[in-house]
Picture 1 (cartoon, rainbow, N blue to C red):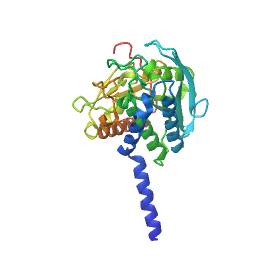
Picture 2: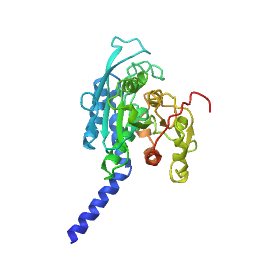
Picture 3: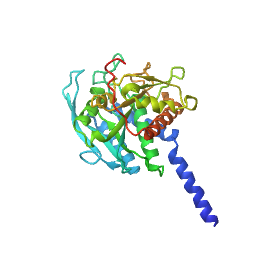
Picture 4: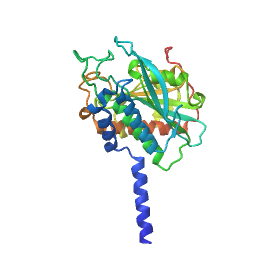
Length: 315
């Protein structure tokens, strides 16, 4: 009897852990992806491929189904356009994992994992930065950490949600949203079954007075319904933007008439500079943002359908 009670408490403890966002996991992911050994995860580099392998190892750990073309990978080519380089055409890949709950609809959760490498892609904002490692902790190791932690929570919480989840780590975002555009043009999953898409890009440097920006609020009238159920006193401060377009991967899905939300904590002095390092991330606030995201995702379970609304036209 005592052994049964002990086992029950242990099981409850594991379930509780699985349902909670863990700061230690976020730190582990960011410190690995944004370490000097990864040399900025530039598209086409062996370190970029190593980042893809790391993400794959986590997807396997969470028992996500591979939904690429080659296992978890969807390979494509990306072109460097902002700098003259001899290897302007570079190999890249998306990393795609699927949590199949046998549901009719699917929520896509995405974040790009590439960055500027060693400043040779032409996007650095620092002077004389050619050859310097741009670690990209906020841009976008923070988003990838969020992607992986949400994948862990949803895959290990012993709950069968009424939606499936498609987790995508996009390649070559810094070269012009190349990975996400390639995916929506060559989907490995039926886009007609996508309920909506959540994108994370730079969510690690929260300005607590301003709050986290949530762009795409207007892309479905149901977002208003969902956010009415969100108690702002329970989460980090946030504000919403109506438009669906923006400088990140949700734009590719928006252009396919899919409702989107884009979480973003805003620019800072380390943006696209070699100083965007892991020790500058606010991990507690990152956890809070993910808790808010999960509440929004969970809220979308109750709306049934998510009709798309084009926000290019004024309200």
